[in-house]
Length: 58
Image (cartoon, rainbow, N blue to C red; front, side, top):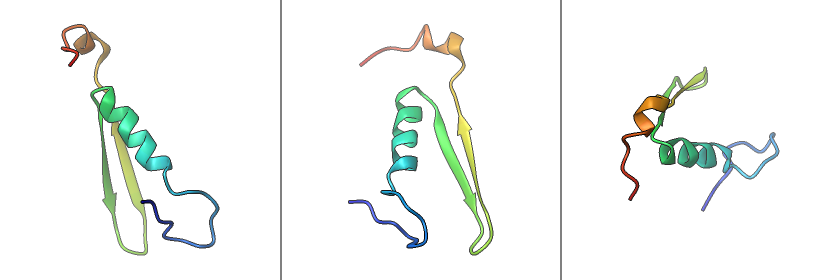
């Protein structure tokens, strides 16, 4: 299911996936901007705490 894109680094490759799921489950989101062979920028958005009060749980 998961595949490492680089052999020179250790890990299973699921870290960002887990973070994404946790943020989305809390009502937030993650966006990424990437330039080939340069840099990737991740933006993490959290829901404001006062908005959680009115959130319906399904």
